[in-house]
Length: 187
Length: 187
DNA sequence: ACGGTCGATGTCAGACACTGACATCAAAGG
DNA sequence: CCTTTGATGTCAGTGTCTGACATCGACCGT
Image (cartoon, rainbow over all chains, first blue to last red; front, side, top):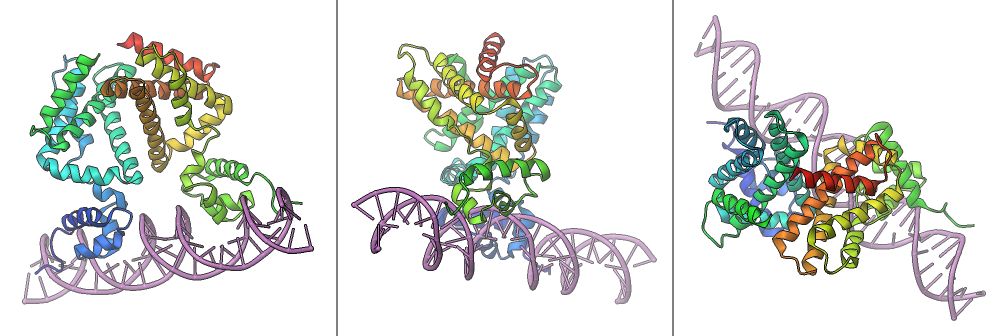
């Protein structure tokens, strides 16, 4: 018999989402989440660097995914297709880990809280840097790499919004493809 | 004789920059800043919503500047020139309020502190939304408005980096023009 | 089976970021 | 001269996050 119930982290993840949805992010303390998960506040902060991180510690690390993908595609491919492939793969992984409904609920919570928007922006910026750096590693000139990375992440965000809206029932990757086409037509 | 020295806010602004440069953002408490400025911690939080805000409460509100500029230019102009005009004006105002050296010091502090990067990203996102919304108000379609706004802010950021680097001695607006040209050639 | 190490958690104290409520007192205005 | 106002001070309290140390089942080697 183990001393504690297993998967404390998973219980905290669930408890946090429930409480944030029930009473809002601001009115939920780290101690509330810990208590509902059956652990102490201290344990919460051992698993998550800060209170916001509990909403961003997904099962997938997007940064790693995009770097791997950029490294894996055909070395002859042009920068833009590579960048799109990267965010497409990130979308595929994220889409496999959550339903659109879950993603939408989370997005709703984030949208209501400036502090969470900041963290979201930081994560997106991090993904952008990761893509740009990986492109530079393939020999792409830096300004072009940055532009491609920024645009690709913009496509990712637009695709996310569509996918999470749940209006149409397409996998996340397909939403990325559509957003990329839309951008091409736009320019 | 007034009860307190005038310009408490200005003194706190100066004290904050000094202390952050001397000992870093994290090792500086709000109380430290207040004490050096000759006020209490409570007064600090009356002037600034939070500790980070003291670094972002510039003399200029960029959001307002861009909205005004978008509203003021020729109604016939295409979206992209309008967006660039907006960030150009923002750059001109910011460039008038600070020297490149001051801007560079502040940028260095921000670059060292994730919490400050988050706030910076939020401000940029806010400026992006402001431009996009103003463009939509002029009748530009939303996806195009977003794209133009994002790109214009990207140009602004690139121009800021150049200007603050101080390697060449040009006004901020001119750096924006150059960055915009560079982007045009790139695509 | 025994003993030692390890790892996840608990417990506790404390620094720091903020907030609300109320007090103070010079200055401005009638 | 009196009243009001506004910027500040004072104080108490909540919430976030961290460091130090204790606990005790699980695991490993003997």
